[in-house]
Image (tube, rainbow, N blue to C red):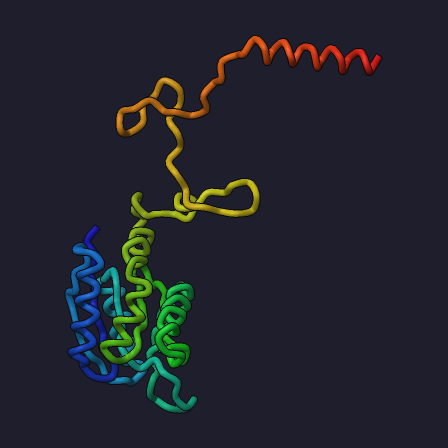
Length: 223
């Protein structure tokens, strides 16, 4: 599936950060195409307007914002990308922000100051990234492999992977990566060989006689 993506830099056009993000997207999947890169002033309503237009009118699959995600004084008009994004989102994806901060936190604890959010509007995935080429790249790297599966789900694509397909329950409260079910009797495996499965041990006459003797002795004692 082709993913049409856009990058919005806030509050000014950060050429290095945009280039870093774009390069990572292309390295992640050849099916991701950045069709638009723009910048907008940090005014909250302008950010909201661009995001709405890209989602509702241009129907882009993926929008990445860069910048204006750090702490600021409550009344301040700065660093308000998370608030602008949250206003237009219809569904939240908190796991994205959690894993980005956790991953970047291994490099610097300042990563936990980032207030970026992620979520869905219509069929569009929106993710906030921090300002700067290195931070934006580091945060995006943590969730890059989730972009395609998410967009597949948003488009009800039959190839969208699920947790149930990725994990299996072992009956003891633990999970492990799912394996392909073994071939049944008479079938061949993908490499053309017969399935091994459980082999039947041939009956040993001496062992069988010993078993009968033990069983007879046990019965006599019970009587």
